[in-house]
Image (cartoon, rainbow, N blue to C red; front, side, top):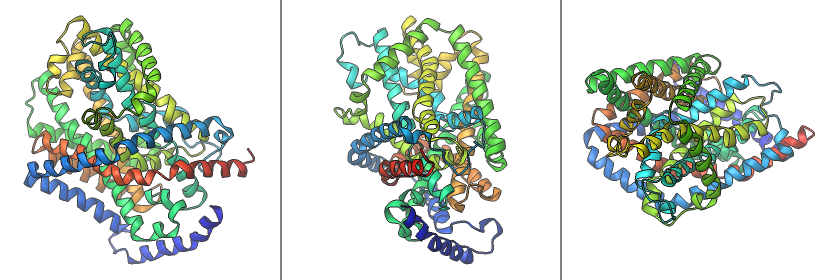
Length: 531
């Protein structure tokens, strides 16, 4: 691999020089990959325009594409995630785990800040609303795998433990592993050791060589990956506008109007764009740190002043069930309709984030070992995520068991923000806690917004320090598209969230080679470092 990589460098550099020479003399577009810029940006804008023109038509197209994608690729995605997790763990526990990545020996970012950025970026705002809603959804309507088990009837404590276990599967080890455990290794080596650009196409370099670095295939790959992550980020941004507006009306009586929703988005855009412009070592770190401190404070409060006994029991029982039923849940195929709208939907969403999240992980993990990176992403972060789901969703289950209907009734019709506020209102100082959760959700989405703005900008330039103007453009455009989509109600955002799963099809093919290229690179680096 080394010889072929070195051999391509002159060609790659020539391609870059040619690209720079043909770039228009527009200052903020200098060094930008224009084909990728216009294709990814153009498709996003076209989606928004068509949705505004006829949301029913767009929803129909998206639903058809969604159904086809899940039917043809659902099983492949399940196997891909499972193999990614297993191979990553094997690399971490073997001698390759001691390999230091990124071309430097001392990490750039402190361990606490590093963990904070990764947790906040990858968990994102969905981790707040879904943490409240998903366990309740599985409690009121048991997953097919658990539906027939003795003692699992709806309304029982066992049904609550089953609901937590199913939520852990969707947000646990496999979901996290795909977001940078193997692909992070590939990026760290090919970019920082071999000088290839920090773009999704680089993941395919070991397979296709120069053809993917300089030809149309690379442009298509980068555009698909950017589009997937932009769609995956615009969705939560728009979703947040709708959710926080709902919360403000319920808590403060502020009218839940489009003007309120746009005002929330303007504030959010300002926060994450400024954060992205200030860079990884400043704004993104500060925002992530604030996020973690507030999340930990709320977790501690709920743990000690909420339904403590159930939270402890629920976590232990739910996690035990998760481990016991790990393979059956991960490979479950018996109910396609349920599977498509739960497991495959979530995993398609995470897959869409995969390449750009791996680029971001590579950017902030220089100087870390393979063991540190894989164990944080694939083990530690999922365990923390599952505990967070137990704190929020488990409390909801405890309140529901004690007083049937107190959480499930507000949640009727899949009302995610209503479920969250119904839970927080049952806690001591319910009003204050509700307000703090709205703030936390906003910061969560902002940390995803700034990280993904930064990552998209890296794709546009191929460097790990893209120009501020590019970061501003993508930060603003994602917010504007979100504002346009929520103008037609939740249907626009829902269509975009389903569209993410469609974009995950080509992205999942980009991620596939890392199953064998990451181990090859790890073993090669271990030999080079004398391990």
